Amino acid sequence: MSKKRYPWDTRFADLLTLLLAFAWASPMLFSILISFRPANEPLTEGNIFFGSRLTLENYRAALSLAPWGIHYLNSVIFVLGTLAVQVVTITMAGYAFARLKFFGRNFLLLVVLLQVMIPSGVLLAQNLATIRALGLFNTHFGMMVVYWGSAFGVLLMRQAFRAVPVEYEEAARIDGANVWQLFRHVYLPLTIPTYVAFAIVSISAHWNEFLWPLIATQSESVRPLTVGLNKLVQSTEVGALYHQLMAGTLMVIAPLVLMFIIFQRKFIESFAQSGLK
Amino acid sequence: MAAPVSNLIATSGRKSLLSFALPYLLIAPTLLFVLVFTLYPTVGSAVASTFKPGRTPETPATFVALQNYADLFNSEHFLGSRFVQILVNTFSFASLTIIFSVGLAFLFALLCNRQIRARGVWRFGLFHPALLPLIGAASLWAFIFADTIGLAAVVTRGLGLVNPSWLGADTVLISVSMVNIWKQASYYTIFYLAALQALPTDIYEAADLEGATYFQKLWFFTIPLLRRTTFFIIVVAGTFAVQTVEHLSALGQGGPGDTSNLLLYFIYQVLPERRNWGYVNAMTMIMVGVLLVFTMSNLLFFEGKKQEAA
Image (cartoon, rainbow over all chains, first blue to last red; front, top):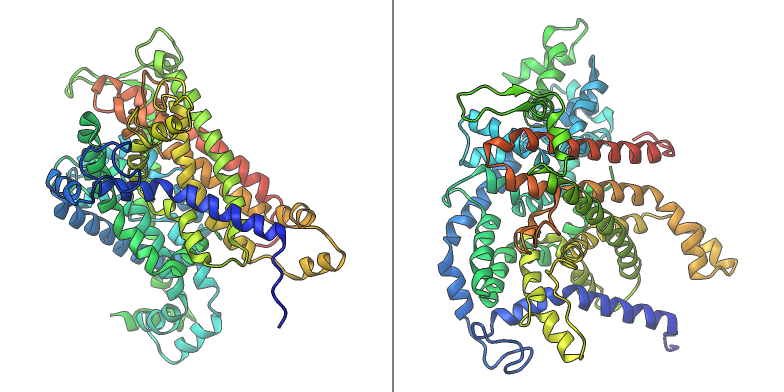
């Protein structure tokens, strides 16, 4: 067995990867360290990394500043409620655009695609007025409803359904499968990876949504985590209580980051697939 | 109920009403949501941008044609005096984020796409910002940028350098762009990585036989072959650059003055006041216009070169 060569250019690239990864992770690494420092102890006191002692008091302080349990629950409702309806709408429309011929198909697809170019997040004022008119202001429904139609999801499912051989559908039809059976036994098993990819992209996008939930709601009982975090940001900036802000921020971002660590491969594949339109 | 439905379609010797209506029924929900929350508000914004709202909900709005747009570009006007700077900020912010985040993403993807020990760890280091809410990312950076007690201040002082006031008037726009670049570069890395892994290997093998260097292969194969991916990422980056403004909430709220304010954040700031509604809609239309021109020009540019259909 000969020893593996380790040429200088590979060494250099490895070192660069290491340095960049460390630089990119440093905001996160430092916030973790700071969140365990005694409250308001400056970096120049004690050990620069670990402070004079490690403590959970910042977490306790951050916990008491907002009803985090309710914010968590609201985020979960918002994210899952959005996803549940999206899955139904993109399945139906994705199938129609993939497999059915009908008058105006291309035109209607173009109308749907408008949403890719004009994201609803930009149309704050008008959508707020619509939500108010529908009596959905300050409700979970009001936050979710603007995302229930997803042009991106329709495109993704259209592509996935088109990749299923037409013969499978014909064979199932001849065997007398109804629409539900056709979907359940022919299309669904073959397109599950696409659904998973869509779910991951949708969940991460809406878990992180901020501006729309902020203006579409008023009371903490319906507001998601990001809006709660913003309140913490505003209140801690005044007193420069950065240690507890870091603790609060880490609590908010932890679930998604943990999910990513567990399902790293799946996450990367899903994000990547969302780019392969 | 479902069985007869599909049988009608399956045995469609004659076109039944249902098989005719089915596609429309299937796309109806999506179409409804797109019409109500994308098309209607766009048209609504266009119409509302030509009106001046009444002082109270009871008084009717008055038609002013393009006066709202003219006011926005009038430096004497209470919003116009701020608008042009904010528009310029938005363009600078967008250009900075697009150039640096796409460039860095390409570098990250090249580095991540190699054999390296503990690859997952480095990848995680480079990817994780993509998962954070922007307001959370900004909040992490708030401590870095904080005057005197912040991480950047302590480090620069330790190195004997002068610490810039990161959120001061001169540098704040660059600071808020940095936060966005930090997050978006991670996100676009994923697209580049996927594209790199889908590249055909045979041409690289041939090039190796010919003795091509790494940078020759990069320049003559990788970059041209990734052109579609690059354009896709630029389109996404452009739409994102206009939409992603929530980090401002944690980093100076558009200030000092309006030195770091961005269009969508400005809209959010002035939205509550009734007298601003005409202007809010005019600004929305300007934003939609910029987005459409940007997306369409990119689309035409690379759809024209695209070979395969879907």
